[in-house]
Image 1 (cartoon, rainbow, N blue to C red):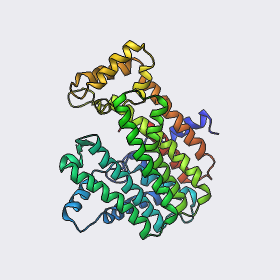
Image 2: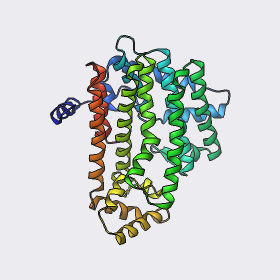
Image 3: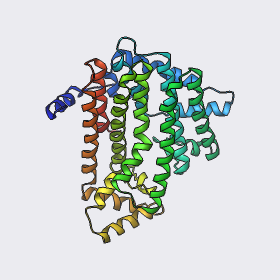
Image 4: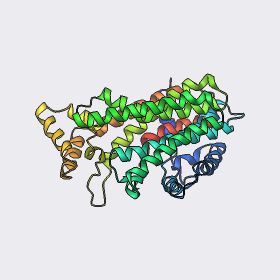
Length: 351
């Protein structure tokens, strides 16, 4: 078990990390072992090439998606897991192919999510459905999902099939539960945790599992999966905290989750601190926030007044601690230290 003194020491060791290894990568990646940094850069080219097709329009859409990708946390998890599991020969062709398949599934899910949510923004840029049409976005997402399956068969990674198929099912179910609860507005903490586990944590867990299996360390696959799942839970809670912290150019809260009637952990906790009358008033604001943005400020202020962000941060840190305790059983190595740094990063990041 990792005690509080060890955690504080780990946090001190992760301070002062500057300048990412490549455009789009978080600064924390600069502390990773050279093997992982090189693999991530090599993966960028591998992934871009993997997206090529015979359709000029589809290629244009894929370039647009690729150039606006996020933090590559799933590829980082695959390579760190592989290196921590088998330091002597961590990266095989299956490692890169498995990473590409994971990233394709993730990218497909967010393209489809933007269509479902009718969102016109993704990381400060137009979403695919806003730049083109929902029809093109759905087809692009379908293409990415199919390419992931093709990648598995091309590299004969049949032992990865269950690892890959489980998150696809879970993400679909999680999205349906979230849609249902955005209508009824009766999300509990237990339901919220199940949603984010299915929509985010399962795929990050699968990334870690594939890292171990691709390097021939199947005996560590379950441990790596659990590490990834806990990191994923903390990562998503932090994203949900951002929705109440970030503001637009006018200084007003973005509140995208509120506008989409998503009841996340900060609001769930805040609602539990007041009586039923006040709960109904706030939920009414959530319900009408898409047509009147002033309600977003009301909900945000309510969450802040009732310590919703403080509580959510504490819960996220508990998931990080679970990940750290699991990491502690691994053999000491630079990759293990980087897994510690990555775990701490997910709740300390500012974007």
